Length: 259
Image (cartoon, rainbow, N blue to C red; front, side, top):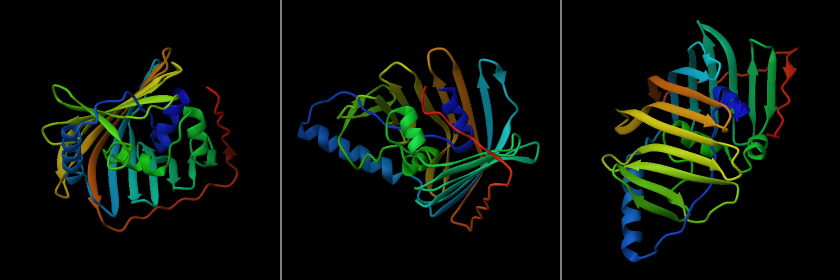
């Protein structure tokens, strides 16, 4: 799970799973459709996104220095990340539906692969579009596709896929007041860990409500790591540059999918 958080720092992460079945009455279906409609009516729409964020990282050894992370997205095509410390670029990533690439200037290392590694590591399939939704405050699954259980809670709704996967369980929390994502929780059924993503500090942007803070907590039962992402500025639908070239002489990172 610590490798998982390392990847979050450089390229972020998304995943999938399921839970229990529920009643399929007409009243429930109508209520679910209304909830999904309200949820996506309030979802940020954009062609490009350019965001400046601050990242704080903490594990059992303590807190690390705050990192500035620039996130640029060309929707459904590319995600570009640039991490810098004290004004100096330290790591850069370029992610497309086909590839995951990043390099680390501090250690002269690089990774050039795809989502297969992350899928093998987690034991469940993940893809570019799930990562894109996670970074922009949406549930990693598109609720308009598939069937889900909606359980009302004191603060909103707990949403789970009706068909359970063997490898992982997932829970989405959606607020009743403004129909935004509160949290996403992933539990590996083999007991190897959990991943919690909490969203907060919602503000208006582009006529929609967007989370300006993400809190990602990974726990494998022995070690706990936390990544906090604070959005500072966000520009929508402007021209975005995504320069990326792995420097020569860097050592390739060989990531082992075994836990």
